[in-house]
Length: 151
Image (tube, rainbow, N blue to C red):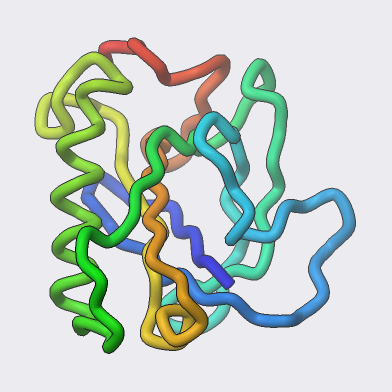
């Protein structure tokens, strides 16, 4: 299962973990989100706000987030490298890729950033993928793509 969280004016990593649990029809399993998908935030469970599925919508409709980049862990580590290393790598890469997508560096943007990353459990299943998403500020929505939005 992959988690998704709405963030408020700060970079907030999101745990990603696969679970075999049913999801609401019409939603996309969080681990099947793709670059270019626009989606609404879901209500999370527990401290890590982990989600099984998220409501994906047409980007022309009001939405809270848009997935903009996917990449893999750079090494061939068999053992999970630890939360600090995985989260640090995800944050660094998503920040670096933010400006290429939005047209403005993260520090200057009013938009927020979140990302999905492999957890120790999903790592054991071979998961090495990260997915970056740009989000509207708390209480706001995006309409259309955030590509080259420059905000």
